[in-house]
Image (cartoon, rainbow, N blue to C red):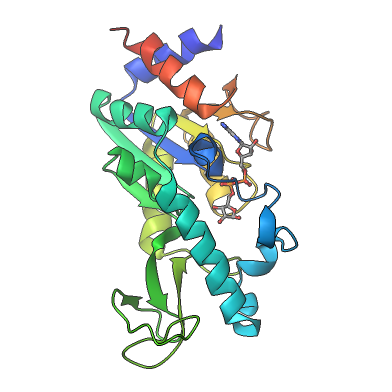
Length: 244
Ligand code: APR
């Protein structure tokens, strides 16, 4: 049974790095990125909304799509998978949580050392100036306008075709290369550069473990695969490593 071996690796680890994707939030009711969209939004593909071109073409549509997603996230609660990672941070000497998720659920669960590779849907920035904006006047404009320059406001997330913040990707790369155990949880391992992190970890000699309901391009390269929902597999792993 892989769980026993993975639990032993975790227990002996000095530095655990983790990459999470939208699969870890699935059990919180936040739909994964590539899931079919529901209701009003079912006729749009996320790949056609989450781009600077889409925003330039139809800013109102993109802003409202994110407003809908923000509402979903606000109503969601961290699940047992998020909570298991909070416990893991307390158990191991060094811990780096790298997430592609923009839902902020890791921090709401209580994780501290979190690198948000793709930003956070609850933050807003100016599309023109690329600076954080925390307050603005609601004038009926959708999207609202930047109080400094009058430019359009947008969510502070990384869209397709945009670069990641250098300090985020550099921190993630460094942790991936230095860790001795790397967990890849609930990500399709398709979107680069995040998708390269588990491969960097394997190159660096880390034990790479994949937790996913399905196979991905990482599956063949991972030392262990734990098949199943993160909200079940992660708590099981923690209990196997540190039985109470
Ligand atoms: N537990 C574990 N894994 C799950 C679960 C679950 N309950 N449910 C789904 N999964 C897996 C799926 O099998 C899939 O491999 O989670 C993965 C979700 O994949 P994507 O929807 O592609 O999400 P993600 O990997 O986070 O996407 C990466 O792409 O669109 C961009 O910026 C966006 O951050 C996102 C990035």
